Structure formats: C-alpha cells, structure tokens
Image 1 (cartoon, rainbow, N blue to C red):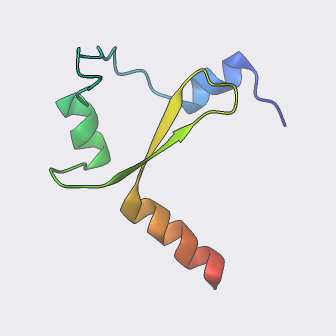
Image 2 (cartoon, rainbow, N blue to C red; image 1 turned 180 degrees about the vertical axis):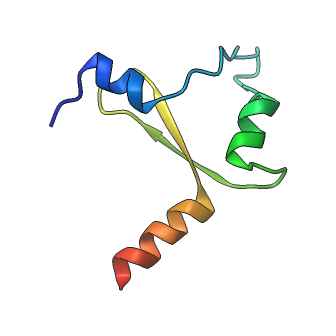
Length: 72
C-alpha cells in the first residue's frame, strides 16, 4: 500500500532541520533524544528508503524487541 503525503504527515512529527557537517556528521537535537530516550552509546540502525529520498533510524533495543516478538 502506498501512503499519501497527508497520511505521512499524520504519522510523523516534525522536529526541525539537521545540518550535515564537513565531516558528514549530523547531531540529533536534544528534544528528539529526550522524546526517543536516546542516550550516549546507544546504537541506531540506519535504513535508506527505497526511493532514496531519506533515511530511517531505529534504536537497536526496539529492533531487538521486534525480532523477539517475531520469533515467538
């Protein structure tokens, strides 16, 4: 099923812009880290979207929970 732009806007929350540094690095804003409970040392899985228009970041502990549920 293809999601329409309006559906994507309902499913997502806008927090602001990131700037890529000269070293190719970005910083996750503290508000986002707080909401997602991301702490120093946490691992994030990076997935490139099929349309190559962006990336998704998933906390590794959340991914572990998904795999655990799937294996039951």
